[in-house]
Length: 100
Image 1 (cartoon, rainbow, N blue to C red):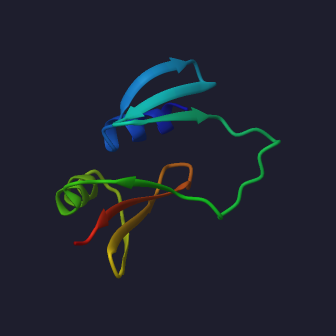
Image 2: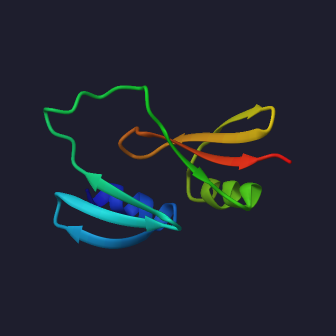
């Protein structure tokens, strides 16, 4: 939990609202509440889900996060640019920017 909170708060810059020891934490992005909860034996890891975060200053955000050690896998598909990356627990995340 310490590593996850550190990553989301200090690396991605998302606000920590509440933390309940090593069991649960709530982080707040603009108009989005994310709950961080430790996996249990009842949760089966998979690769069919990723969480996307829309950003306004895409290139600036990429540079800031790259300076903190995040490595991106880029994708451009028509009207959108995506920058895929993983958190410390290997969860799939991506930044997105709509192209006009």
